[in-house]
Image: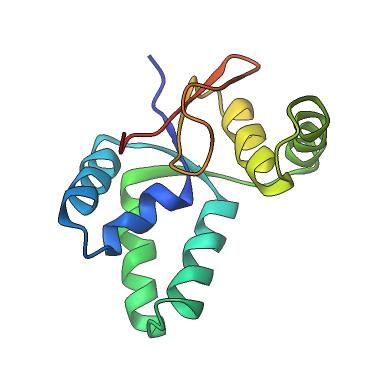
Length: 131
């Protein structure tokens, strides 16, 4: 069984004051998985904009994430598949882009709190690990 693809919203719970969700996010990361550069970008954006974290703190978070998961690049193929997914499933583009990266990475499961739990996209099953 392939490792899951992990959305940024799951990873960001590492920084949450909700200890139950933070512990779950930590367990998910420790088990390993795959993310895309988009996920790293979203983590940095939230850490700076919403959490007002300093760069050294963000660097430490990024190092911890990258130590646990494989990171796949964003490519033209990812973009093209994301557009197809948008058209077929009416997802917002950035959610479709996460799904496209997961599919191209060979993931069978996508862990995300923001997308519809149980939805299947071209063989990729979306699961909310906090439900």
